[in-house]
Image (cartoon, rainbow, N blue to C red):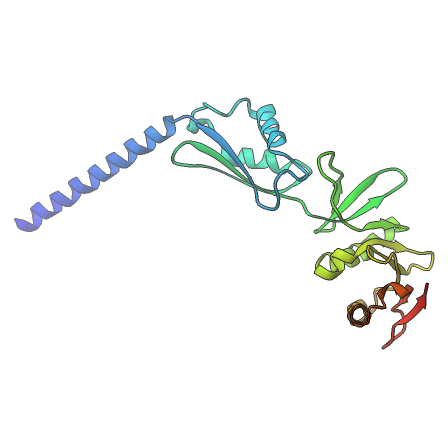
Length: 239
């Protein structure tokens, strides 16, 4: 008998919990969007602004604020945001208090190409990225690179972007008629003859070792050309 009563209590408890959960869920669905909160995970107002995000959503879905939460299709909003050429990824969600949140990751440019026909960035994934009227990225300028050689230029730009020292120092990447790369520096306006990408990491290490020495000796500004092509040595031309 006692076991029978306990079973009834358990069934009643489960029923009450299910009812309360269903009631709360229904009440939550009927709530309206109280506000829209946009967050950029890698820098505020760079290539796309809060206003541009809101405008994109309004153009496709109307005024989202004050719409019932049950009308909001999160995956659809995410697809719309990701369709923007400046956005790499987007996560859209609803909070318990009725806010519509959007966490946005902007694309990351690592080099800029000034073609005769069009100018564009190359992003961290190696894809083309349009310029932004809102923000200009401080990245190396690619020149002399043909469409057939863009893969090598991307690899070199990615190597520079991944190195904090090179990222601050290199402002230009040029490919000459011999298909060899030449780097231009921010400080000292120097020309670094890198050659091909064969043993490029070893060449970069030689360059860093050279810079460590000349910065310590305070002879940095004496050199105009730094040649890294030859094995196990750095050949310099003075100004």
